[in-house]
Length: 319
Image (spheres, rainbow, N blue to C red):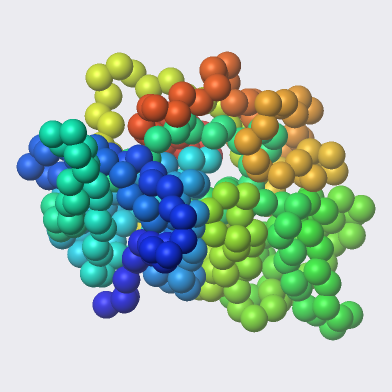
């Protein structure tokens, strides 16, 4: 069994600030309190991921039911819509809740935990987003300005930035040849170094290295905020049956775009790129790369992944 996901607490000798959290239990109890941890460690198939708690929107069991029923497997939702999956084998989390004018320490019964939320609204990315999916259940955004793909062939070793690429895809099997077309028109064929796809993330862990046999897709999309109908179920904890578990690989190339668009990292921003991409080979994902007209995030609201999930689902349905 994969060892653990753990929350690290800062040394008591150092000054610490507390982070507001909301824990929902399977029996209907809701605990509103604070934790002092600053980092979430996730043990995943890509290694141990160190995630700043400030980037985390919520943590839910990877399958329907409580954390106990999912055998410790969790989905960590980042505030930009990225989902990272791992196992929380022996989870422990101490909270303090305000009761009777004082703070009361509470050790959460983690096997009954059905949702763990932090404050802050979704941080919608601006510009084209580079979305990567794996067979491990991960579904996350990639930072093209900091991601270098190391390809080897008979001419040598090439390390283009993802932002320099017009398209990137395996020729057939991800463990075989890959084809990279640069903005300059150069087309390279070769094998990815070390048998992995190593990418930088704009939020969460600094980078991830995904084994090629776990790779599903790397593609460009344009996201719109998708409104969620009132009364929609907000505790959506079953993610296991979506695309990464389906047979076969998604081999669609990246959408052709200008160098200016590609150099724009998938980070929250107030401005929005407006140039339209030209689809090559497959239909371009629809929608504009906007944050939608939103007010500045209200910090006392609890993060909810519904709008981000609806946007992802709409993209998947349009493929």
